[in-house]
Length: 195
Image (cartoon, rainbow, N blue to C red; front, side, top):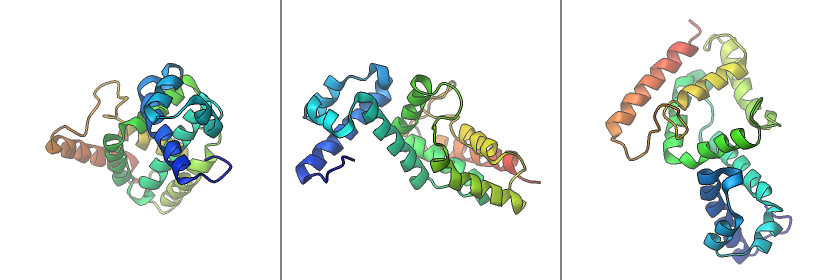
């Protein structure tokens, strides 16, 4: 958000820029996104966009970190039931495929190795603590909590918009999604069980 409070009209413009830019970055990545298309579709101008975000990269960062916060808040981890968490992530990817595409562009164009987010602690601390507590309680297999989290997330992405095998969509038959959810739930449960 800008340093100064926004007027209702300014807030509406700010929101339009974010909405349009989210679609633009999800489709084209950082390098392929065009500020001209964003401002035209958002019914604003470059000066306004740069006043709010500083640069095209600043706009991407605002959207990308907002998308990570959304996934953390909308799909909070339940380390006592990692299988359910994986299924809820699967559903979020169906609902908001743009979010996983943004993360993929960030990986490809910004951080091709190592952690996706430089300051990963701000997003992962709660998850890692929850996994460590579930491990201590004998509910989740032993191993580095980060690696456990990474594996569950990877399993949840098996049919995501960036899958190398098959990208599912919300428009597919519900029976198909139920079969995938059941397989995912069972697979995560078996892989992460302490027993």
